[in-house]
Length: 190
Image 1 (cartoon, rainbow, N blue to C red):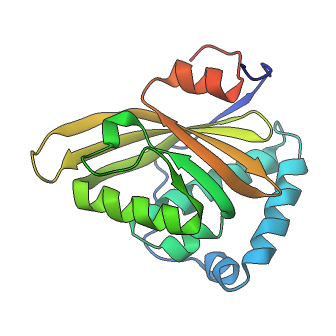
Image 2: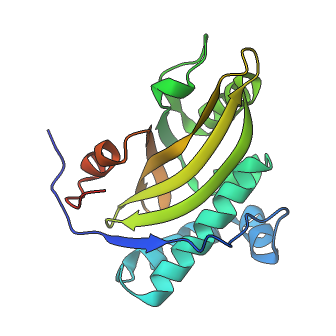
């Protein structure tokens, strides 16, 4: 069954934006009190997607999240994910021995270890956020190199994020932006 198609708000991320190289003061607070993050996130999700504040906060959160992931700060990453989270990595990234689905915080830690064993991250830069309400699509430029073979991927990937109660409950990643938008229920062409 296809999701209901919805209008979405597209926000480009400033190309000069940089991923944080270490935790900011607010990130230190949310790691210490993750429940505060969930409350704040629920409040942000209530804002109209077209509001400047909502768009600014989503961009800031995207940079914070990807920065934490790239530098291996999983405690900060996990604050944003529900305990029953489910992740389906793209086929292109699945090396031998990797699963097709990872569940929960433990699963996310296992996937991260599997990815870091198989791939070297060269770049992961957020380009755009598509806000469709409880579903967000992050479009990133991703460059990876396989540790064993040296094969490289250098392309855009779309990360379809489903949010419930202010936390991420599901993520699906796609190399095809149109497929990601259809999965997210967004009717706009890429």
